[in-house]
Length: 327
View 1 (tube, helix red, strand yellow):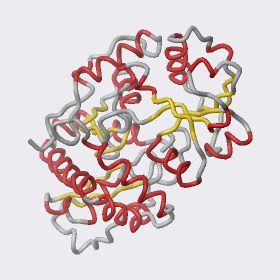
View 2 (cartoon, helix red, strand yellow):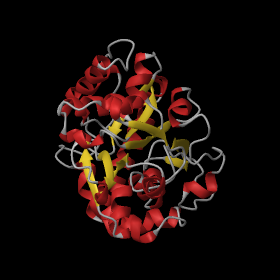
View 3 (cartoon, one colour):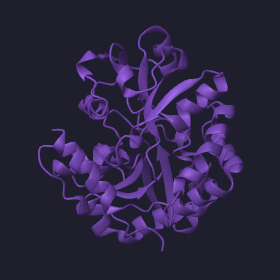
């Protein structure tokens, strides 16, 4: 689930990622659409695989291929119309919109930000002040330093005393043993893996330091042209996806098995534990799964602008919509 650890594969590898095993004869008369993942299959995506396996997409007239990102990435494929839907992040949608890229977030997969800075307990990093004199493993984005600066300032700590190291494709557990002291992770995957390994972590969720950092990650996306020319397909896609995530919320064990059937190379124990942890967080305190708040978009955009991460202010109302979610 780490954004920087993409495993690049061709967008044509449909068999490995599509799941469901539908034949062309069975799908005759259905509208064929593609959803591009942000990374390899994981529990952020379970609702999509459930919707495919349980026939929810088919019930709504869709033949959906779930594919891995190619070198272009999900955002670029969706924005250009080469794929109808994708899995993205509020961060990247915000940056795209400011550059007039017609990418739109149509549903929040998870209601609250489950990411943060993690370190092995024996490193003794329990507050942002402790980042000083330590090495941080990241992916080279300006957002990382801005977030770290923001939370370190609250303790009068100096971000310039942190050694930034580009981890590349190195996994978290190898990196913190060999190269760095802490890194930015999603607890729902890497944190759960640490639990299973018996490796205790100190975890600092970024949302705990500022409400402006409690943004939506990940989200489902489409493009403006798709919304205008084929709104019924967008509604059908979200109706089925909502039903899929609803099933995952109520039936995490069976949903986990469906994900494993679609992606058998995943570690079963990790998937099942992650699914159990994440199930209540998909909808959380929202009125319905997928709901997005204007306040959340405005808060994060203003934070990015104030930290010189955007060239201009975002028109948040154009970056997301709840219009296509089932009522």
